[in-house]
Length: 120
Length: 491
Image (cartoon, rainbow over the protein chains, first blue to last red):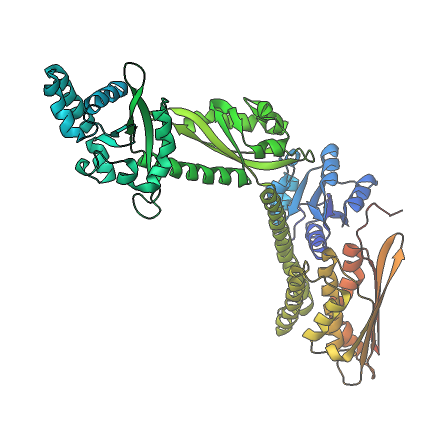
């Protein structure tokens, strides 16, 4: 893992129901200087975090949160103009067409690709 | 032609009717001094002998006065053994009984036509058929002198007709019995006929289904593909399209597959289209389910790979690149493998708390040293993996450092289910009694199990957990909701 501060000062929301993966991703982001919002394991938790005062500059969304789809969170991010990527085991056909422009990172996620998508 | 032949055969044969017909007829002309009549007589004989139909002339006593060549061939009897004898004498009482009523009607002045069947004429089971026409022959005063019988062999036609009827019958049985909805159509889907099945299924009348009437039974959203298929049909020579058809019995639109091929004339021009519409709803549902399952499999597999990577990272962080890494990582992969096995059988064999704990203890060869006590509780798939990894860490730790490491320890795992805020919750207690003081520092060193219990279970499963390590071993409680939260219940 390379340690740089390319994400310094950024507040990144991690939405992932699997603790091991959420923890892993959060650790990677922190290693690049970001401050992690969450992680959130459910749609409700994610919506609560977005409803709070904490600033959010970008987000990574697992599509399937214990059987619940993360699309309400995605809709809110679009509305707020917050860049985000989907991290998922599904292929693109499982994603509604309104998110056609959103980058899809297949699991296991490539952290470098995530950075590019969120910074770009 | 029939009438003239009848008349001439009659006039020629009538005078010598008591004697030998043919010889008599041949000598009758010159004897009467009418050469023209004689020549005409010969001409008619020639014509009769070359006609493809059996022909005969009977007098009022039903005696043969004349038969032609085809009659000889059909009956296999030369005319010399026929002339002057009665029908009963020549063809036997059986045939006579059959034709006599018809001959008698003709002799009474009626023109008679009927089909005659001669059973077994051409061998066992092979009947001979003739189409008999009996024409009365009258003199100038109208008195009936005899009967001209004309009987073409129609056996071949009969056999062909019977075969056709049988084939048609089979086809009708097939069409009436097949589950497909059958129809006929002109170009561009202008129907000309719909089967009883189509009408029964859609509730349409025959009239209602004709032309584009059938389209009313098709889901409105599927009209465009249906019509596109018909527009392309002339070019492609086939219709092959799927659309939903409304079932009259409950109003449900079910998926159907429609196929049609054209019937062409000798010049290859399309005369009409024959088509079937087949229910494929079950297939569609299975396909949809398959897509869901494949997507789930993708999701689960990719998540699993990510979990493996995370476990590798976490294990390496604790062991460093040492032989210990191989051992710990291998154990964790084995636990992950066992839980995949349970998950893949979960549809047939629900995963219970008891089965999950037992599977971990058995893998360590410690199944008999633990007391498990609790009601049967089924676990939903989403919580199984994380819980199994946590239980694996507890069991491994007990085996290495705790209650299961010596011969005098004991492990109690008990659980109960209770209602909490409208959701059922599982409360599980893990209590070790080592029987002798254990090295707490050794037991605490790895710390991965503790992290899973104190952080992963609360995070992923909404669990409330407690973890205590004492000299007698680990005491741990896990309290987690068994059902997903329907709506947020956070404050």
